[in-house]
Image 1 (cartoon, helix red, strand yellow):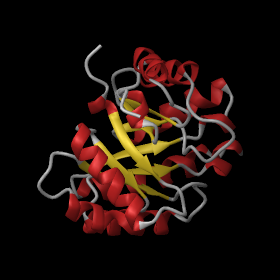
Image 2: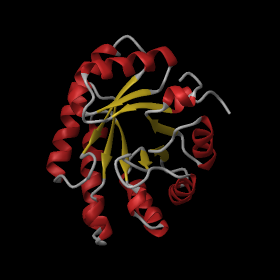
Image 3: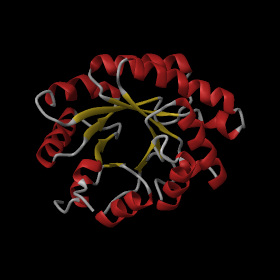
Length: 217
């Protein structure tokens, strides 16, 4: 398997993260050639400026971590993040509406943010929060995401009852086929974990344990 570094969105989403913490993960991402730095929207402009002369992408989260914001707010949040310099946005679907079987509302919510992101040439991933779904629901949610034309379906926020599992990634990959890609996030703490996710079908990994995964912690 090729180097893990370029699979990794080096992630810091803790609410207590300070500017010093953010600066540290930016430095780590540049030094280790990680794919992106994933931070909360408040830090996007700052991180974008720090990464300006590098190949590392700036990524952020939308409607995070609950997915229960209104669609208009998710769209506005995505638009501001992109204006501030985000190269990629990871939005949370409306989990409650999905659990209630209101799939049309879920798809329309996602579609609105996907359209806004793609209008500005920004990659978008959609978090379905697998820990709260059955296997059948995981497959259904992944299919809905693929139908919107999003770039990735993503397992988890990392803020729910558990994170990604290789089992979930297999289900997601089977549901979306080659239409879109799969990102695994949450609970990926070792190189073994990372390799298992990739073998299951993930092409991107979200983790705060990046240095440990590449053997530098």
